Length: 365
Image (cartoon, rainbow, N blue to C red; front, side):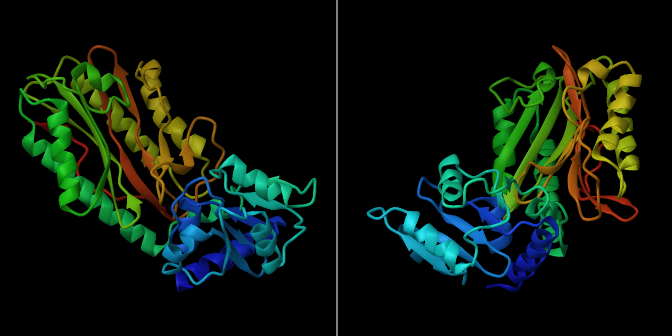
């Protein structure tokens, strides 16, 4: 078992004790990655990492055992297609000393059949919940290693964005620009994750992606991109203009920039996420564009590209040091253009540190 896994299990057990939870069940995915440093191939065969107050073990499909052993020293209790998982699951629960837990916390991304298999193996009426107050709480606060990986990815995304700025010319399609972005991520050993290139009216659709639309002089272009290297992602949005800006662009860009700055100023340890959302939203609403800011102000970023905390109008999550999240207000004017400016920040004691080093000024091409 790695030192990182040992430390994370220790921290998790402290939260379990605090919450009076005696069993945590994780399925292959990002929660398992965070604890164990890997996850087996996710398929229909039941695979669970079960964590009790003192011991932990895997319920492991026999087909995955050999390939998984290289990544962890945690005990396996294997099952075959011929026998099914039930007996091996009971052995796993007995091995960690938890057959009748006071309460169980389930991975919220777990397949329903995995969850029912486990719950049916516990005493009827065992209290159950998801991971928000235990593992989820820990994952929101990034450690130094996670910060370094997120910072590295942010700088790769900066360079991929700069590549887009360098190649955009009238007559190119959005897809051609997207290809250049993807190729740049790949050149730095990062897997491209998404590539929004929205020119002119397409930019008014927040999740447009990219198309065969041809970029023309006078187009404002939303570019929102992300890649992934060493298990962590990036996410950044910037604006470019080909030639002269469309009517009204400068005014709207200035409003969105003011909203970003307001959210950055509001983001402090101890502040509710909804107050950061309100800081950005109020700027846009006061300028008369409230109906055109159609999404939340931000989302957490970690192993998952979207994870808690979510910076929404209703979220009462309390922000704390080490949390990483986006600040990305936008204004979307149908048939004209959209403007979104996005930063990923890590919250420090004195406020947010921006991971990108690329200015938010519109790039004139």
